[in-house]
Amino acid sequence: ILRKYQNTICKQFARPNILRSIIYGWFAASKACRSYEYAQKLGDLTPMPIAYKEVRYAGILRDSWYVCQHSDCTHTFNELISNATFPNRAQILEAIGKFTAALHKKGVLHQDYSGGNILFNADGSQIEIVDLNRIRFHHTLSMQKGLTNFERLNIDQQALSVMVAAYAQAMGYDIDNSIRYVCTHRWKKHVRQGITNL
Image (tube, rainbow, N blue to C red; front, side, top):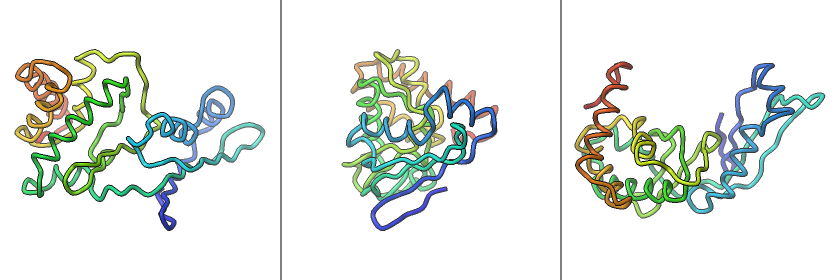
C-alpha cells in the first residue's frame, strides 16, 4: 500500500505469513529494512530514503513500512509501453538503456525490473528505480544475466531494440547479438504467459 504525505511516500508492506514473520524476525532483514539500506547504497538512482519502521511481537515481524522522498520523476515505464507516440519516446528509451548499463556496471541487479518500477522525467534526463527490496548487489554481472534483466519490460520490439542497443553500446557488447538475445528470450517467456507485445 502506497500513501503520499506532503513530499514523502510511505509504503506499507503486506503482513507476512507466519513462516516469513519468523524468518524476518530472527534470520533475515525485512523488506522495509532492505529497501532503506539499499536506497542508501543507491544514492541518486532512487528517491532519497527517510526511514523505515517495524512492528514486532516477541521478536516476530508483524508489520513494516518504508518512507522515502517523493520522486521528481513524473512518469513510469508503463506509459512508454501503452503509448507508442509518447513525447521523446526514443530519447527516453535510449536513456533508460544507458541507465540500466550504469546499474549493471555498479553490480546492481533489480530482480523486478518492470514497468512500474522505472521512473523518469519528461525528457529522460532523470531516471530512478523503486521497489528496492528485491535488488541484489554483485561484484560483476555476466552479459547473459544483464541482458536477461530486460525480460519483464513488455514493450514492442522496435522500442525494446532501441533500449537494448543503447545498453549494449554502453556495456561494450555486440549490439545486434544483444538485441537478438533479448528479443528471443523475452519472446519465449512472454508467449508462454500470453502477454507478448512482439
